[in-house]
Length: 163
Ligand code: RP5
Image (cartoon, rainbow, N blue to C red):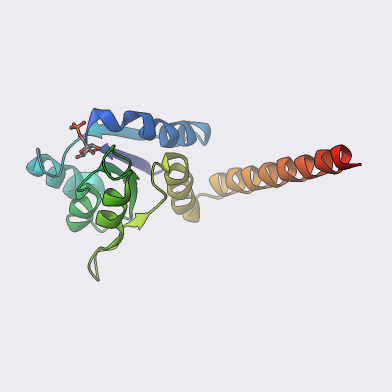
């Protein structure tokens, strides 16, 4: 199976990164995680992205807050799909990072998930890898069925309480 490359702009992003890592682990998806800043270590960012495909990665997930250029810079150096996670910071609650990530120029997209949406980044990365992995696709279908069952159970309980 292809691996997922997880890149965060700072170790202060770790609480959000953990949501994605938990999801990748739950699906038994191999991954590597690195701290690498688009602004503080631009050469390292270029190196990670340039070498990712040949190192067996199939998807990159990039986490950054504030003026969040990491996902876009990684996408500039690779044809692999990049999932972008805006991380909330105190001043602007993540709107700054969200807008930085979502407004990419034509030809260089990144797939931006919700502010602090680490879990969904893990799920989306799994969905991309599942295009060529039937066993992983089955796990995703099971996850969706479990979610549906959980909502239906809550609906049933609500009906009981309202009687
Ligand atoms: C961004 O700036 C990082 O992704 C982080 O979200 C934010 C603050 O970084 P630190 O000052 O905590 O290293 O580049």
